Image (cartoon, rainbow, N blue to C red):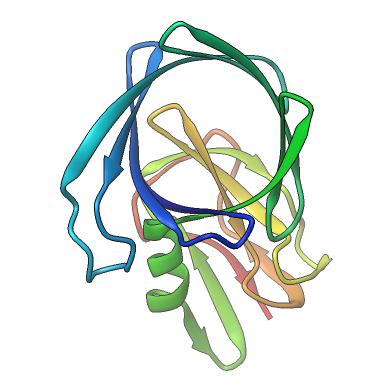
Length: 178
């Protein structure tokens, strides 16, 4: 997964994340503009990561150990590390492209589709439910990482087209919003 991360309004930095057994491999990439920058790896960071409970992460980076607490807000994360809090905005580029390029609106209906193949781990809404921009719709797990798909705008859930535990292909219809 390629992400762009901006902390406190700084220029976004680009990273590629993937798992190698129990480690998370972070490739630091050159270029920050989607589709315009390069994807040359400038360096690698290996992270041993354990999540003892939701929102709490124990990280081992080199010989340094960190305990990180993450609180989620609709448009950012609050990351608490070493008695400091950082406001972090991260965008999964593939998800961003899927939402902006693959978003189809027909007759006022917005179709939420799976950005990548995976398994539906949680359904966060029900038909008839009112939702706001940024509200979670469905969580799709792929390669041991969870991708929460969020509403692009306010509306009402018309259909939930999947069930928890169901395998889905990239582009599969997950939900429809009116």
